[in-house]
Length: 90
Image (tube, rainbow, N blue to C red; front, side, top):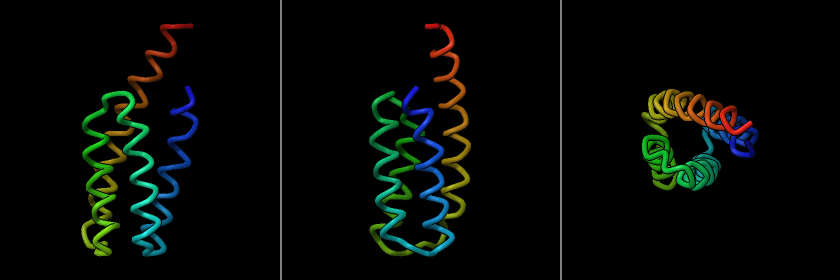
């Protein structure tokens, strides 16, 4: 449940970093999201977040919008799976 509450904030930070062209902020936010998703074994999200983290570390933002779109797709799948899991526990 906590992840489902926090992930929109992290995705927003990544989105804002891309809009502002801030490679450092992109790297930090993607790193945080990667760690959180890793707790669920969400390999696809971890991989996409890692791509964005490394993009931020390199300071080269070309292609980052495409990587972000792929991350959004994987996050939607993860959130749906987690919601179903949370609902089944209730």
